[in-house]
Image (tube, rainbow, N blue to C red):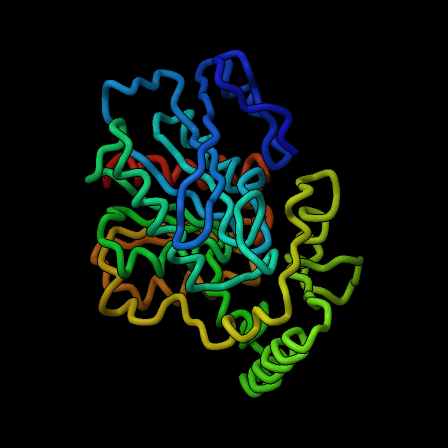
Length: 331
């Protein structure tokens, strides 16, 4: 939970359950709350700035994209803050319909809007005098990783692409967490999304489905049991992150493929990080194989599951040990 990330060098933070105090003993960062437009929506963001930030010079800059059901104060904010400590300007923001950003119905997970939000974030960054336009990259976590990859395929202003615990959310909906569910289930999900749209147009209340479990269930994969802990306990819960989405989101999700045309369009340098014990590892392996990029790599964090890379101190440090040199070289 965030305590403070202030405009002064003395204000320290806890983001996603991790203290920045140890790092800030030798380095520091500042944060500025901003808003920008994405189509009809106003997005709320936190611009994390290096401790030695100066508006009079240009800085390498990263757009940091939160998971499905997450908000900028959780793992996206943690990574943005850590990247600022390493000298990057980093923008973490709430997606359309989510967090402090506008859009109805609330918490809608719309892939087209999510990808457009990334492009809009780049639009905004290009207007800032301290952002070097040729040194903008993107980092996404979980579904945010899939969205970041998808956005990069159609926005060549993003010069380097990183993803942590990447998930192609459309494939996850169709094939299940481990990728082993029969694709035929997709037809039922498609029909459920369409039925909810009709019911709500007729006046029924909006019905939601969880993006993370809401109660303990020993039959769930370890990653998903850990997601319950992350989103629904003091570990990282946030008032803006109930980790749910309207059922009508299924209409947008069942047909979405974050990696569509990666063989042709994903040409930027690509750094993936995933846990060896993550049920979601197959997403990273798939995009690594499919990407057209001649400079692509996957770092496996031994012993980590999907959620460990959100806020596990040792695991996040290992992820950043790969991401920071990657962005320094490519940006």
